[in-house]
Length: 297
Image 1 (cartoon, rainbow, N blue to C red):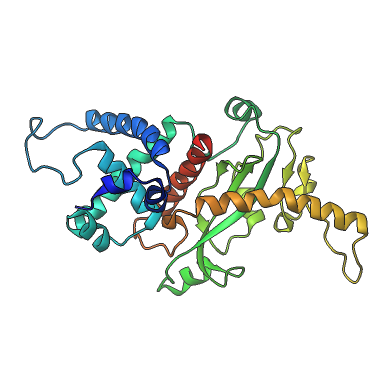
Image 2 (cartoon, rainbow, N blue to C red; image 1 turned 45 degrees about the vertical axis):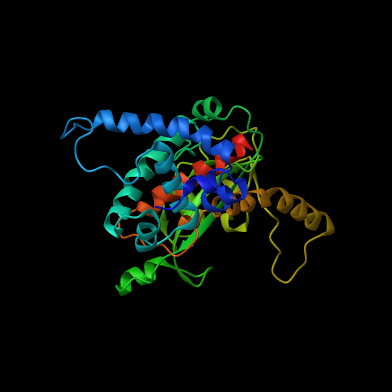
Protein backbone atom coordinates (compact mmCIF):
# COMPACT_ATOMS: atom_id res chain seq x y z
CA UNK A 1 0.00 0.00 0.00
CA UNK A 2 0.99 3.64 -0.45
CA UNK A 3 3.40 4.68 2.33
CA UNK A 4 1.39 7.41 4.03
CA UNK A 5 3.99 7.93 6.77
CA UNK A 6 6.26 9.66 4.28
CA UNK A 7 3.50 12.22 3.70
CA UNK A 8 2.61 12.48 7.38
CA UNK A 9 6.17 13.62 8.14
CA UNK A 10 6.22 16.25 5.39
CA UNK A 11 3.81 19.21 5.57
CA UNK A 12 4.29 20.08 1.90
CA UNK A 13 3.29 16.57 0.84
CA UNK A 14 0.40 16.59 3.30
CA UNK A 15 -1.04 19.78 1.80
CA UNK A 16 -0.54 18.43 -1.73
CA UNK A 17 -2.21 15.08 -0.98
CA UNK A 18 -4.85 15.97 1.63
CA UNK A 19 -5.22 19.77 1.67
CA UNK A 20 -4.26 19.88 5.39
CA UNK A 21 -0.96 20.10 7.24
CA UNK A 22 -0.02 17.54 9.91
CA UNK A 23 -1.29 19.68 12.79
CA UNK A 24 -4.74 20.12 11.20
CA UNK A 25 -4.81 16.44 10.19
CA UNK A 26 -4.16 15.29 13.76
CA UNK A 27 -6.83 17.64 15.14
CA UNK A 28 -9.42 16.38 12.65
CA UNK A 29 -8.39 12.78 13.35
CA UNK A 30 -9.80 12.97 16.89
CA UNK A 31 -13.31 13.84 15.66
CA UNK A 32 -13.00 11.42 12.74
CA UNK A 33 -12.11 8.51 15.06
CA UNK A 34 -15.08 9.36 17.29
CA UNK A 35 -17.42 9.43 14.27
CA UNK A 36 -16.05 6.06 13.12
CA UNK A 37 -16.71 4.55 16.52
CA UNK A 38 -20.26 5.92 16.56
CA UNK A 39 -20.90 4.40 13.12
CA UNK A 40 -19.56 1.03 14.26
CA UNK A 41 -21.81 0.97 17.33
CA UNK A 42 -24.86 1.90 15.25
CA UNK A 43 -24.37 -1.06 12.90
CA UNK A 44 -24.99 -4.57 14.32
CA UNK A 45 -21.97 -6.87 14.05
CA UNK A 46 -22.06 -10.01 11.88
CA UNK A 47 -18.97 -11.51 13.51
CA UNK A 48 -17.13 -11.31 16.82
CA UNK A 49 -14.49 -8.55 17.06
CA UNK A 50 -11.38 -9.61 15.14
CA UNK A 51 -13.26 -12.03 12.86
CA UNK A 52 -13.32 -11.90 9.08
CA UNK A 53 -10.83 -10.56 6.54
CA UNK A 54 -8.57 -7.78 7.79
CA UNK A 55 -9.28 -4.40 6.19
CA UNK A 56 -6.55 -2.90 4.02
CA UNK A 57 -7.21 0.45 5.70
CA UNK A 58 -6.72 -0.82 9.22
CA UNK A 59 -6.15 2.34 11.28
CA UNK A 60 -8.24 5.48 11.72
CA UNK A 61 -5.27 7.47 10.46
CA UNK A 62 -5.15 5.52 7.18
CA UNK A 63 -8.89 5.89 6.68
CA UNK A 64 -8.79 9.65 7.18
CA UNK A 65 -5.80 9.95 4.86
CA UNK A 66 -7.61 7.93 2.19
CA UNK A 67 -10.78 10.05 2.13
CA UNK A 68 -8.85 13.33 2.28
CA UNK A 69 -6.65 12.07 -0.56
CA UNK A 70 -9.80 11.31 -2.56
CA UNK A 71 -11.17 14.81 -2.00
CA UNK A 72 -7.90 16.57 -2.80
CA UNK A 73 -6.74 14.53 -5.80
CA UNK A 74 -10.05 12.99 -7.02
CA UNK A 75 -8.52 9.77 -8.42
CA UNK A 76 -10.58 7.24 -10.34
CA UNK A 77 -11.42 4.10 -8.39
CA UNK A 78 -8.90 2.18 -10.50
CA UNK A 79 -6.11 4.58 -9.51
CA UNK A 80 -7.17 4.72 -5.84
CA UNK A 81 -7.36 0.91 -5.70
CA UNK A 82 -3.89 0.59 -7.24
CA UNK A 83 -2.32 3.08 -4.83
CA UNK A 84 -3.95 1.60 -1.71
CA UNK A 85 -3.75 -2.05 -2.83
CA UNK A 86 -7.38 -3.09 -3.18
CA UNK A 87 -9.75 -3.52 -6.12
CA UNK A 88 -11.72 -0.66 -7.67
CA UNK A 89 -15.02 -1.85 -6.17
CA UNK A 90 -13.56 -1.72 -2.67
CA UNK A 91 -12.09 1.71 -3.45
CA UNK A 92 -15.58 2.91 -4.30
CA UNK A 93 -17.12 1.38 -1.17
CA UNK A 94 -14.47 2.94 1.08
CA UNK A 95 -15.02 6.32 -0.53
CA UNK A 96 -18.78 6.36 0.06
CA UNK A 97 -18.47 4.99 3.59
CA UNK A 98 -15.71 7.35 4.69
CA UNK A 99 -17.26 10.44 3.10
CA UNK A 100 -20.23 10.09 5.47
CA UNK A 101 -17.85 9.63 8.41
CA UNK A 102 -15.83 12.71 7.42
CA UNK A 103 -19.01 14.76 7.08
CA UNK A 104 -20.09 13.67 10.57
CA UNK A 105 -16.66 14.56 11.99
CA UNK A 106 -16.82 18.04 10.44
CA UNK A 107 -20.31 18.38 11.89
CA UNK A 108 -18.85 17.70 15.33
CA UNK A 109 -16.29 20.44 14.67
CA UNK A 110 -19.16 22.83 13.73
CA UNK A 111 -17.55 23.68 10.39
CA UNK A 112 -20.26 22.46 8.00
CA UNK A 113 -22.30 25.31 6.46
CA UNK A 114 -26.01 25.57 7.21
CA UNK A 115 -28.34 24.35 4.47
CA UNK A 116 -31.07 26.80 5.53
CA UNK A 117 -31.00 30.12 7.43
CA UNK A 118 -34.65 30.36 8.42
CA UNK A 119 -34.72 32.58 11.51
CA UNK A 120 -32.68 35.43 12.94
CA UNK A 121 -32.42 33.52 16.23
CA UNK A 122 -30.87 30.55 14.43
CA UNK A 123 -28.38 32.81 12.67
CA UNK A 124 -27.32 34.66 15.85
CA UNK A 125 -26.84 31.44 17.82
CA UNK A 126 -24.67 29.87 15.12
CA UNK A 127 -22.86 32.97 13.80
CA UNK A 128 -22.93 35.73 16.46
CA UNK A 129 -19.63 37.24 15.28
CA UNK A 130 -20.55 37.74 11.59
CA UNK A 131 -20.59 41.39 10.46
CA UNK A 132 -21.15 41.06 6.71
CA UNK A 133 -22.11 38.36 4.20
CA UNK A 134 -21.67 37.82 0.47
CA UNK A 135 -23.89 35.57 -1.69
CA UNK A 136 -22.92 34.14 -5.07
CA UNK A 137 -23.30 31.05 -7.20
CA UNK A 138 -20.65 28.50 -8.12
CA UNK A 139 -20.82 25.76 -10.74
CA UNK A 140 -18.99 22.50 -11.37
CA UNK A 141 -18.92 20.71 -14.75
CA UNK A 142 -20.68 17.40 -15.31
CA UNK A 143 -20.61 14.91 -18.17
CA UNK A 144 -23.01 15.83 -20.96
CA UNK A 145 -26.21 13.82 -20.39
CA UNK A 146 -27.37 11.54 -23.20
CA UNK A 147 -30.99 12.55 -22.72
CA UNK A 148 -31.77 15.71 -24.72
CA UNK A 149 -34.14 17.14 -22.08
CA UNK A 150 -31.48 16.74 -19.40
CA UNK A 151 -28.94 18.38 -21.69
CA UNK A 152 -31.08 21.52 -21.90
CA UNK A 153 -31.81 21.50 -18.18
CA UNK A 154 -28.16 21.25 -17.12
CA UNK A 155 -26.66 23.53 -19.79
CA UNK A 156 -25.25 26.72 -18.29
CA UNK A 157 -25.28 29.71 -20.63
CA UNK A 158 -22.62 31.35 -18.46
CA UNK A 159 -20.15 28.43 -18.52
CA UNK A 160 -21.15 27.19 -21.99
CA UNK A 161 -21.28 23.60 -20.78
CA UNK A 162 -23.38 21.24 -18.66
CA UNK A 163 -23.02 21.99 -14.96
CA UNK A 164 -24.51 21.67 -11.48
CA UNK A 165 -24.83 24.79 -9.33
CA UNK A 166 -24.75 25.83 -5.65
CA UNK A 167 -25.37 29.15 -3.94
CA UNK A 168 -22.96 29.96 -1.15
CA UNK A 169 -23.24 32.45 1.72
CA UNK A 170 -19.79 33.67 2.79
CA UNK A 171 -18.83 35.91 5.72
CA UNK A 172 -16.06 38.52 5.93
CA UNK A 173 -13.49 35.88 6.97
CA UNK A 174 -14.13 33.87 3.76
CA UNK A 175 -15.94 31.14 5.70
CA UNK A 176 -18.86 29.45 3.91
CA UNK A 177 -21.72 29.74 6.38
CA UNK A 178 -24.61 28.73 4.11
CA UNK A 179 -24.91 26.39 1.13
CA UNK A 180 -27.91 25.63 -1.06
CA UNK A 181 -28.81 22.23 -2.44
CA UNK A 182 -27.22 21.37 -5.80
CA UNK A 183 -29.33 22.36 -8.80
CA UNK A 184 -29.11 22.18 -12.59
CA UNK A 185 -26.80 24.70 -14.24
CA UNK A 186 -29.63 26.32 -16.22
CA UNK A 187 -31.29 27.66 -13.05
CA UNK A 188 -30.65 31.39 -12.62
CA UNK A 189 -28.95 32.58 -9.42
CA UNK A 190 -31.89 34.81 -8.43
CA UNK A 191 -34.44 32.07 -9.02
CA UNK A 192 -32.35 29.61 -7.02
CA UNK A 193 -32.13 32.09 -4.13
CA UNK A 194 -35.90 32.63 -4.26
CA UNK A 195 -36.44 28.87 -3.93
CA UNK A 196 -33.97 28.46 -1.07
CA UNK A 197 -34.08 29.75 2.52
CA UNK A 198 -30.73 31.53 2.77
CA UNK A 199 -31.40 35.24 3.35
CA UNK A 200 -34.56 35.20 5.44
CA UNK A 201 -32.68 34.54 8.69
CA UNK A 202 -29.94 37.15 8.21
CA UNK A 203 -30.46 40.13 10.57
CA UNK A 204 -31.25 43.51 8.96
CA UNK A 205 -28.15 45.15 10.43
CA UNK A 206 -25.84 42.75 8.55
CA UNK A 207 -25.25 43.99 4.97
CA UNK A 208 -25.54 41.44 2.17
CA UNK A 209 -23.28 41.84 -0.86
CA UNK A 210 -24.52 40.40 -4.18
CA UNK A 211 -23.71 40.94 -7.85
CA UNK A 212 -26.01 41.98 -10.70
CA UNK A 213 -27.13 38.36 -11.13
CA UNK A 214 -29.44 39.03 -8.17
CA UNK A 215 -31.06 42.14 -9.68
CA UNK A 216 -34.40 42.79 -7.95
CA UNK A 217 -33.34 41.41 -4.59
CA UNK A 218 -32.79 44.97 -3.32
CA UNK A 219 -36.56 45.50 -3.64
CA UNK A 220 -37.26 42.60 -1.28
CA UNK A 221 -34.69 43.19 1.49
CA UNK A 222 -33.42 46.49 2.86
CA UNK A 223 -29.92 45.22 3.70
CA UNK A 224 -28.93 44.29 0.13
CA UNK A 225 -25.93 46.03 -1.46
CA UNK A 226 -25.89 45.52 -5.22
CA UNK A 227 -23.74 47.20 -7.91
CA UNK A 228 -25.19 50.09 -9.87
CA UNK A 229 -26.38 48.93 -13.27
CA UNK A 230 -25.31 51.00 -16.26
CA UNK A 231 -28.40 52.70 -17.74
CA UNK A 232 -29.12 51.95 -21.39
CA UNK A 233 -27.46 54.59 -23.56
CA UNK A 234 -26.00 56.42 -20.56
CA UNK A 235 -22.98 56.24 -18.28
CA UNK A 236 -22.60 55.75 -14.54
CA UNK A 237 -21.49 58.75 -12.52
CA UNK A 238 -18.00 58.80 -10.97
CA UNK A 239 -19.58 58.32 -7.54
CA UNK A 240 -21.47 55.23 -8.74
CA UNK A 241 -18.31 53.82 -10.33
CA UNK A 242 -16.40 54.33 -7.09
CA UNK A 243 -19.17 52.63 -5.11
CA UNK A 244 -19.11 49.69 -7.54
CA UNK A 245 -15.35 49.32 -7.07
CA UNK A 246 -15.67 49.37 -3.28
CA UNK A 247 -18.46 46.79 -3.31
CA UNK A 248 -16.53 44.60 -5.73
CA UNK A 249 -13.45 44.67 -3.46
CA UNK A 250 -15.58 43.34 -0.59
CA UNK A 251 -17.59 40.89 -2.68
CA UNK A 252 -14.43 39.25 -4.07
CA UNK A 253 -14.04 37.42 -0.75
CA UNK A 254 -16.86 35.16 -1.89
CA UNK A 255 -14.80 34.18 -4.96
CA UNK A 256 -11.77 33.65 -2.71
CA UNK A 257 -13.82 31.27 -0.56
CA UNK A 258 -15.01 29.27 -3.58
CA UNK A 259 -11.41 29.10 -4.82
CA UNK A 260 -10.39 27.70 -1.44
CA UNK A 261 -13.16 25.09 -1.50
CA UNK A 262 -12.23 24.09 -5.05
CA UNK A 263 -8.69 23.28 -4.06
CA UNK A 264 -10.40 19.93 -3.53
CA UNK A 265 -10.64 18.49 -7.02
CA UNK A 266 -13.61 16.32 -6.05
CA UNK A 267 -15.75 19.48 -6.33
CA UNK A 268 -13.98 21.25 -9.20
CA UNK A 269 -13.31 18.63 -11.89
CA UNK A 270 -15.93 16.98 -14.08
CA UNK A 271 -18.25 14.98 -11.81
CA UNK A 272 -17.92 11.24 -12.46
CA UNK A 273 -20.06 9.57 -9.79
CA UNK A 274 -23.45 8.14 -10.77
CA UNK A 275 -25.08 8.27 -7.34
CA UNK A 276 -27.94 10.78 -7.34
CA UNK A 277 -27.08 14.05 -5.55
CA UNK A 278 -23.77 12.70 -4.25
CA UNK A 279 -22.12 15.79 -5.75
CA UNK A 280 -24.14 17.80 -3.21
CA UNK A 281 -22.63 15.76 -0.34
CA UNK A 282 -19.15 16.26 -1.78
CA UNK A 283 -19.63 20.03 -1.94
CA UNK A 284 -20.99 20.21 1.60
CA UNK A 285 -18.03 18.23 2.94
CA UNK A 286 -15.50 20.26 0.92
CA UNK A 287 -16.96 23.50 2.35
CA UNK A 288 -16.64 21.97 5.83
CA UNK A 289 -12.98 21.13 5.13
CA UNK A 290 -12.32 24.70 3.94
CA UNK A 291 -13.97 26.14 7.06
CA UNK A 292 -11.95 23.73 9.22
CA UNK A 293 -8.76 24.87 7.47
CA UNK A 294 -9.62 28.51 8.23
CA UNK A 295 -10.35 27.63 11.86
CA UNK A 296 -7.00 25.92 12.50
CA UNK A 297 -4.82 28.08 10.22
